[in-house]
Length: 111
Length: 113
Image (cartoon, rainbow over all chains, first blue to last red; front, side, top):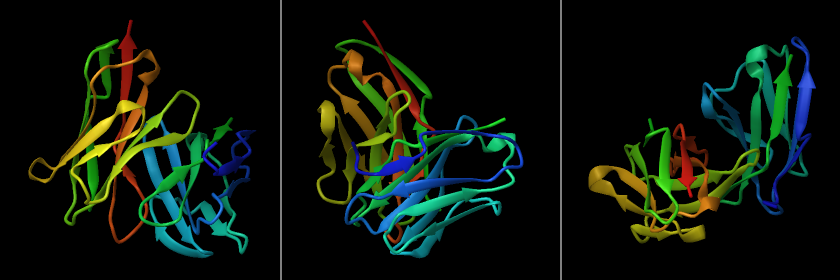
């Protein structure tokens, strides 16, 4: 157990729908990162939050948004879903100094 | 911009043989470098990381990596492969001014009995 908790583990939804992925970081970690892993794109950095504020943005689509709440948990919202959004979505957390710990991921299947 | 290139999308070795997974990076500033392992249907587990201390970094499960600035490389090695090492391995770079990781495309390691 890495200490980073992601829910749900699996999600199946239809095109055009909206879903929310949830992440609880390791205790004490202020930074949360979201990554997307797909067969064609590999592991892509989406977005980072630090203590509730957006810190860095990567290849995140406009249909996707995220936030980090006062209790430091984070949610990734994916809307107007397309077949190509099917992927494994990872959350990771860090307390600084480059130690980034990953959760076990949410597998999203869009049908 | 930082980038990582992993040579060989698939490497196959015999049990007991040397494991060598190659990683080259591109960075305008001294980076942090990482190796992660992903077992089937699991998340990413940190094997080791380089943050400008010793250039030879020892990680978990007998793996180690050597940072060579002149070659911009950070190859992962293990003297003797075990069946349980079969997994996908990712090299990653992190710009020191930020925390996010930029990953290579991964190398799938197969270990033959």
